[in-house]
Image (cartoon, rainbow, N blue to C red; front, side):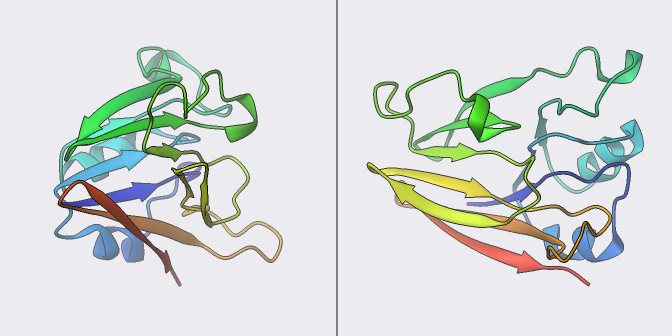
Length: 151
């Protein structure tokens, strides 16, 4: 199973992001969506799970949760916008993957048996940080990730 992971679009859904997400069976948006049209564009590709980030406000964002706990492909996945505000202990909660955005810095790291994934920002360029998203493949209950640089 392939899951597209995107974050910090800030209202911009790049054509390169749509191309990179083609063929994903599911998409997760880790917040700072920016506009409801971003969600509509992603939903046209695959089933979508999304959380609200710190820039997501207004009526369109009110029903979007601040965090999600998902079971996908035999894995427990916790999605939050800012990993620094993580309100659970992933090891104690038996979480396999923590997905967070916010920093705009793409990163894949394993700590204490938990995979931490930040897909970076797929929106407008910020400073010299890359524009990116991530692909999370789940095979036989094991996660594999890769970062995809856009533009």
